Length: 413
Image 1 (cartoon, helix red, strand yellow):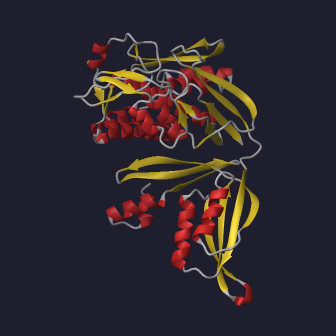
Image 2 (cartoon, rainbow, N blue to C red):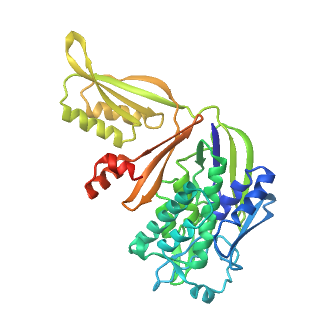
């Protein structure tokens, strides 16, 4: 299984992630990629790369300029027209002329969509870019208490972020890993300047985006993880934890623009796992004295507690009695908890345990749009196969809203 692992000991920014992934390409492919991204059709935007070092570690440093100017952050700073909110991120351009920034036009999500629609990339990459930007807009919307339609981005910052996101999405498509994993995210600590004072680190939008993603403050004072970096991780990385056992093929280093006591870089590993098998446990017991309501409640409690699978099978027990076989699939971490919950919520006096292995495809949800609204497409890949299926709940919602059949809605996507 081709596996991509991102080491985020110094957080993540869009340009750092892109730079690390570029280094995973063969040398000639790296140069071809850089030529390609400068012909995407994003007017006024230019990407250049230089080789640099952080704490004696060599890597790639990306510069993204918009009409000749480089944003002080390779991230977007979401703003309302009347509420300027400028973040100071991981870069050295701290003396950037803020008056110049205030005179830039603002871009709405509709404008972002127009920019992305004009890019010379695949429809999959376009969908990925907009899905990541949507995550950022939703986080900023929640932070500022405004609808997503009223969230606006500085023109320079938005084009800069589009390019960062586009590069990562394109590289994910080129590298096509079967498995994507990352370490917990170092956010840094302290405060970050904005037009109206100091914000805590991680910034509020970043903190929202990192919900459900393992993160920590570490020992470095400063903002290490930006909103764009957090959104890219939330969208592309389904699993966080230690680097798995894998045969490494390539290692890439994406450098940040600022110097810290530790090497300011994202490190990316591309290699092969023998398998994405998981060591799991099958917990089962026979029950003949509980009602259907009681069994349904127990099953739901087990799912909520983290069971990977819970299912009920009708069985014939001793003396010809009808009963139910409860089967629960668990990982090592949740096993003891689930055993205790089976005893708590069922009448069983004993539980059977069996070690099993599971082989899975890498899965992710992709947002797709048409005139009827948004629908999520569940994609799965690995072992040389690819599968895709629309989320039933989204199709059903549109069918009810539009008074259509489910088959009619499917034909529209």
